[in-house]
Length: 238
Image (cartoon, helix red, strand yellow):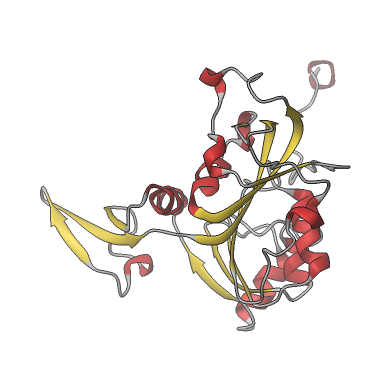
């Protein structure tokens, strides 16, 4: 069995990055994002990227650092409200944006990994989202046709991996990551821990290793909170 574990993000991405490629990046807000891999892409410096991700990080973290470095040409996303630079670049015409309802985007990625070229959904019918897309009626309801999403490279974040690439995700990090692992021509997983093959309970594996090509252990991950929301402690409410 070939070794899937690489020493660091830069070596794991060697030979995978080119100008104009499409990258899927897992995560929801700043939760479950492959921090080390994103930083390595910034440092290696490919340009004119199309990035498929739920959002684009914040101004100084996550995918926002690729945006600030002028590396992203187009975003395919569902939520971008926390990034002022994103707003500025989009409104000035410097950044292309393909907006998706969040569930539609998740299903487009899942379809890409499952070999399904397109599917019909009621979501978005009659709105700007459906402009230029085929529509059809089923059982008295109108649907819009959405096509699958694929990527040249998927970068994802998991909690644990074994050396064969089987992955377990933890809580909210199990968002777009599992489906993106299946929809990339090559998938690199950033994980918190690598264990011996066979030591993970098969019933708890979320992504089989057949979908994972390379693995790195996350180093010095900040795990930032995108927006801290607190409530007063009971004693402060008296």
